[in-house]
Structures are given as structure tokens and as C-alpha cells.
Image (cartoon, rainbow, N blue to C red; front, side):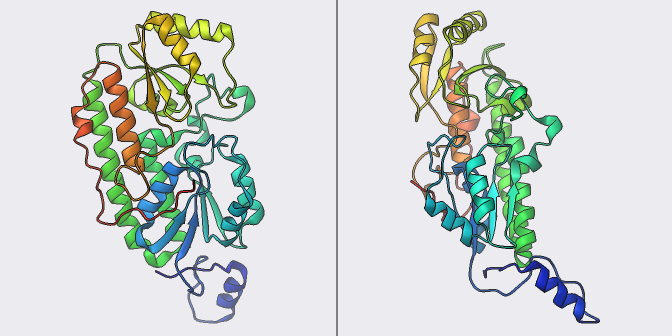
Length: 335
């Protein structure tokens, strides 16, 4: 695959000057190497890599296990953005500092595509305890919902086709493969969540990352201990969460394997709920190149952990295959 160096205005003028030729596509130009696609958080990097296949090099900007809300990108990320042929971000005001750096440093003609903004229109935004409407920033964690993740992938597919029209057939095929896998995962969630005791699909998590999943799959989100700004909840907020956990008879509360929470452990002791501290928001399991080090591996792991923690049996989820392609993921994930 060859890189499309996009020279939009001069190319359009050249096309208009040659009578009798069809209009040129805005993304067409001289080919001089593989496409370089810059992304942000690891789940998004994985989705983009799955759709791009072997037609591009995909490189992430935000290290796994980092708070992407407050991440301040180092100078080397500016260099990545300055070379990228396409920049794909989550959007929904998640990684604002990183997106601002991309805007300041991108090449002329390089598009910045916010797939979350396309996948979740404004009328479907969720505002909640961590993302209050008064601050104007919606919950940005669309990728934890398989239904929304498919829309992320569609936006990625369309952005790649616009940048590299010659690869359209491959991008469509790769999208179809990803969508089929995400739908299998969604079907497995629906089957396994039915094994959770009645009214037991209740989540108290370390980070507020499952709002869209909860809405689409019928789970109740009780709360989140760590809001967007990483500040600890007040004693009154902790007391409210304790009362909710007791009232809902929540058997397990879910923490993060990256950010241990003394507050959740305290809530567990006060309520008798088990504290499960291995949930992941954007830290992919395994290492780069492993089948489980993927969006699919991440979400299968989280859903298995949730279903089992709430008293269900994740048999269908455990049977979801991770090897969706004969090609290993070659995206670059920063440390």
C-alpha cells in the first residue's frame, strides 16, 4: 500500500484546468510510502488497526493505563502528528490536550477525525455524576459499548476510504469482519447477563466508563468513585454510595487494575461487597501483537469479569474467539 500525500487545493485546480477529465478525488495525490495514521487511546488504536489492515502503519499517542482526560503529550507526539496522513481521535472532549496538539502540528491537508462525535450524536450524549451537563462535556467512553464501537469502526472505515480510495474494498471487508466480531460479543453479553440474578445488573466502578453500555444493554450504573478530574469523592458522596450498594444488594464493586482505589476498598468493607480490582477501561490485556491485546480482548475480559462478579455465568463470553484475522496487530502502542 502506498501513502496518499494529500494536496487538496493545488490538485483541485489542476483538475479543473484540464478539460474533459473527471473531477479529482480530494484524497488523491502522489504515492510515496505506507499511510501513517495517528490515533490516541489504545482501544481506538486497536479498532483503527483492525480496519486499516496492512495498508497503513497505525501509531497511538496515549500510553495505556494513562488518564487520557488529563494526559499532556510529550514533544515526540507533536512529531508524530506532523508526519501523519490521517489523525483519528475519540473526540467527545476526551483527549483535548492531545487533539489540540494534533491541530497545531498536523500537515496541511491531513484530516483529524473524531469518531466518537460521529458515533454518538449530541442528542444521545450522556451526562452524569462524573460528566455533569453544567460543564458541557459528555461521557466520552463510547468504545466500551459494542454497539457504539461498531459505529466507531464505520467512521474509521469512511475516513480511511476518503484518505485512501484505492483501499476501499479492503477497508470495507475489514470493517465487516470487525462488526461481525463485535456483534458476536454483544450477543454473548446478552446471553450471559441473563444468568445474573434478577435486578443484579448493577455497576459501581472506579471510573465512569460504562454509561453507554449500561443504556444499551439495560445495566444500572450506580456510580463511579473516580470522576474525570481524579479527585476523591467527598465523605457525603462515599456515604451515599455505601447506602446505594446496600440498598441494591450489589455483590461486587469494580475497581481498576491500573489505579487501585482505597475508597472502593472502604466501600466494600462497609457493605460486605467484594472488591474486584482488575477491571480495565483502556488498558488492553496482554502485550502488543497478542490476540487479547485488542479492543475485542479488552471488552471480552471486562464483560466476563462483570458477569462473573455479579453472580452470573460468562460461558458464551468465554467462547467468543479473539483471533479474528490471520494478520497480527502491528500498531504501535506507546509505553
